[in-house]
Length: 284
Image (cartoon, rainbow, N blue to C red; front, side):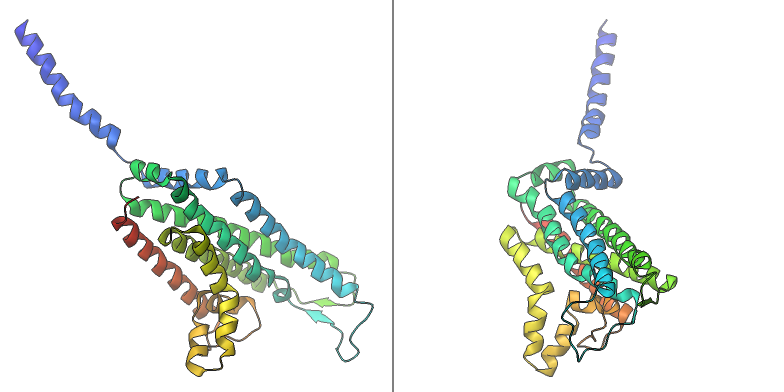
């Protein structure tokens, strides 16, 4: 009997640590990504606003097409009529809708922090870097999907609208595919930059205001100064560098299409790395 009891005690003592370890074992990285995906789609505004901005990109292309076949009743006599357009005309709305996606990304980063739910995430995944990377992957994939699909549809809509008009649509499939992918990357990276900044700054208002100003108003203000050095710096700002492939406006620093996009990707990678370092040292 004593031997049996001793054996039972030994079994209990040896099995308890393994059971506790199993209970404390953090989920795998894929599970963390899936958890962040669920969080995004359970937000009240995030998925809706993201879907609306995608639809708006397509709607803007439709309205732009219709304006070509239904010119204004008060045309400018000095302006030459538009007889030919390219795909680039119908993807410029991506640049403005990316700012809306930046706000969605900031809210995705800050909502948990403001509500205190971020503590639960860090309890489930004690190592904070996987949480940051999982959020980055989710927002990047959503931004890439919305940007690519919406811009592709925006370039296809004019094919039907302008088919019977006098305006020639110079549609080139490889060029359209390149612009669609570039739009997806641009949207994803703008979202990533904003997400990382939101993780760094706990104040929601500041986290929203700074990216919006950086992507929209600040570059124009700085460029208006007229200083050569300042103008060159403007060319390396995230949105200014990344938009080269999606617009006909020259980059102030002379960056070409894909080098400019590489600068935007570099900004995203740098801020995500900084967010990882800061969150590892910060109390939840």
